[in-house]
Image 1: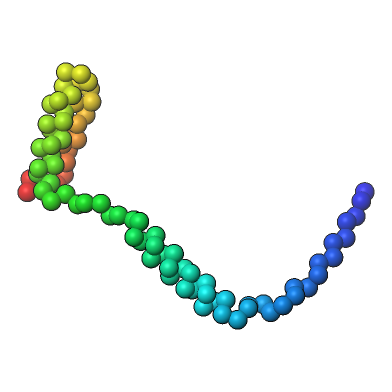
Image 2 (image 1 turned 90 degrees about the vertical axis):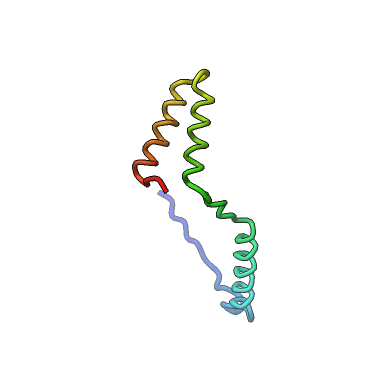
Amino acid sequence: MTTIHLQVAPRVGPADPRGSRLAAAMFLAVWRGVAALGRSAGPRPANPEQDVLQVRELAWSYRQSDPGFAADLSAAADRHERLHGRS
């Protein structure tokens, strides 16, 4: 059996260089600001009733080519109206 002995040298220099906490805080603030610019919440539906009608039109357009998908879309629109009611 072999034994390995590791010797670790003590750290050279100060634990926190001057201004490092301030520099890190400034970097994080800038980073979060830039990240927030790239993020978008996306548009909220202005008229939910109009959205349901658009889903129904989409279902109608797929009725011939993919009847299963059209049925799923229609069922989703029905379920949405049942849960949230008509505005």
